[in-house]
Amino acid sequence: MNILDRIDDFGAIDAENDSKLIEYFYHTKIIDDLFSYQKSIIIGRKGSGKTAIYKYIQHEKEEAFSSLLFKDYPWKLHDKYCNNIVSARESYVNSWTFYFYIEIFKRIIHLKEHITNKKVSKVVKKIEKWIKKNWGSINFDHKEVMNPSKNKYIFTFNPQILGNSLGSLSRDFESTDNISGTLTEYNKKFEAILQTILPELNSDIILAFDELDLAYDASDENYKNRLIGLLLTTYDFYRKYKKVKVFVFLRNDIFNLLDFQDKNKIKDNMVVFLDWDGLSVTSKLSLKNLVANRIKYNIHSTSDNFERVWCEIFDDNNIGKNQLKWNFIIERTFLRPRDIIKFLNLVLEETKNRLQKDPETIDKITNNDIHNIRGKYSTYLYEELKDEISGKYSDFNGYFEILRNIHTLTFTRQDFENSYNSIKSRFNLKANVDIILERLYEFSIIGFYKTGGGGYGGSEYRFQYKSDYQAFNPQATKFKVHNGFKEYLELIEK
Image (cartoon, rainbow, N blue to C red):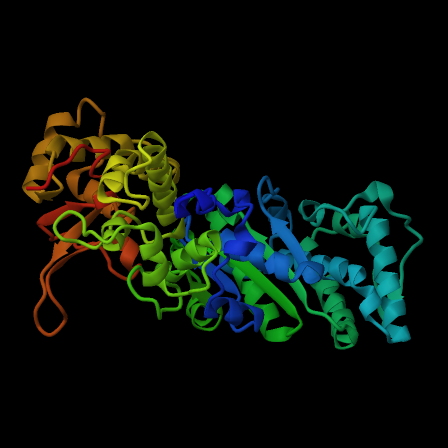
């Protein structure tokens, strides 16, 4: 048996379907920062590992963990409780604060055995009874928090909890024109109750928000304001409660779109960006270490050294223009775990097929194996990006055809204009050349040439995926298509 026979694959490209996620998981300092609650908001591109971190925290802190997934969430329920007195960007804080407290109390009820103080235990029992009267159960779905059922409430039940009277939510919400004010009063009472319970609770409470991007619409101001309200509420709870850990997982393009007063404070104090490094093994997020961890697990190695385990499955010949195989692969990715895992799975399958047909050939991954899957990988990268772009720019297929029509990996602005003019009527393109170039840069399909000098490094092509802080240069005249799209677009090098 050769060493590659030990490897079924290097994991699924999406954490939801990765059966070996926990075994494969790459524990970085970022995880330590999250567990110690130094950071709370996790920002990254699609495929950068947000869901993997979510699932790892859930696995490690299962008892304390409330999984709040927002697929099919009734977002517009929050509109009903919007506070019109404050600015639009703060108008959803009230409803999110209420939502947080209810989910926290639900988790405390599940953890009530951790409370030994009899007085506080009685408080928790009253909260439990009150929640059951309003929602019918303590196990109701989080999507129902903002919609308590009036049919399940006994109106004579109006408990005094630490001097705070809690009544019928459905009745209170329906009997007042000032719903936001009603929420404010409830939130004040909840805060007083929680401040009493937490010191006696021998456990953390974790609220984890994911799938927030599934309702994303860049033109929907209410959606953006709801997200801003969520982040502001997270920041408020971050400062108030050390035992309540709120984790929010969000795509970087959505986070960058949000504009509100305390954004810089939140970014400096709470945000961790999942920016992966493709070359270093000492960085906080090293793709080399992630891959080494997966190879090590599969071949049962005792070594954590990237070079050592890499050479166990790859031959030592350089590829292309005397380039290391790792560098050749990495420059075809967006520096995301998803992309490198996909590439490795494809080339592993290709190599195994070769060995099955000809067992006498080398039992390691070779340059030919890599070249043979480039077309499949390039199509994968396009399909991945298509899902991301299509909701924003419906005519994006035409943008790709402009590049295909140029036929070269590098091109000038004039080349692009000529190609654009030759196909714009066929694809009914409405946006002009400048807009399309910027959109292609936005999704890292192209990079622009930036000259060096002045002590700031050499000249290079700049791609957005390598830095959110590098704005597009509308004056640029030279461009390059990302190497990952070379085969899909049938491009050649000049």
